[in-house]
Image (cartoon, rainbow, N blue to C red; front, side, top):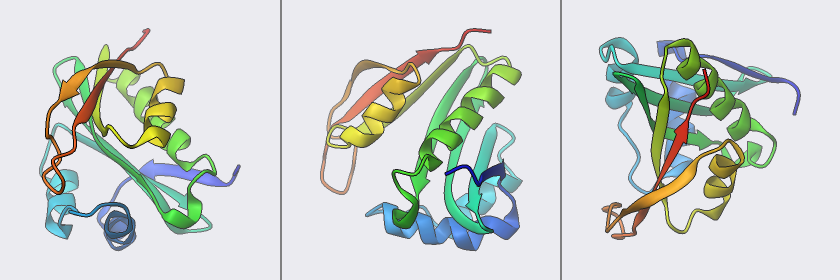
Length: 150
């Protein structure tokens, strides 16, 4: 989809972000958690992807010194497999490089092969396992790392 617009997340995006969040996760973040991230957390960087004005997905990371920790990437089910996740991940990587972030990391469910494939496509490598990381079903998380070329 070439009409994907990725912009900094603002308060006006929260309703759309919450719709994506609730459709994507068994234990969704609260509305207030997103508001805190974009208004109070000076380490947080969040984007939304829009298609024809509708929130199609969002992504966020925390900048901790020279590392970027991707907190979440989610795409509305109606827009999955249309390049939205790639557009969001590309924007995170672009911003990370601009911010001097040299390494990026994330956790992904062991069963989420589609996400693992996406991250691998952008240079993220398997860096280990967090046992029973997800509280909803005690599923393990794969830790993935990427070195950014400046």
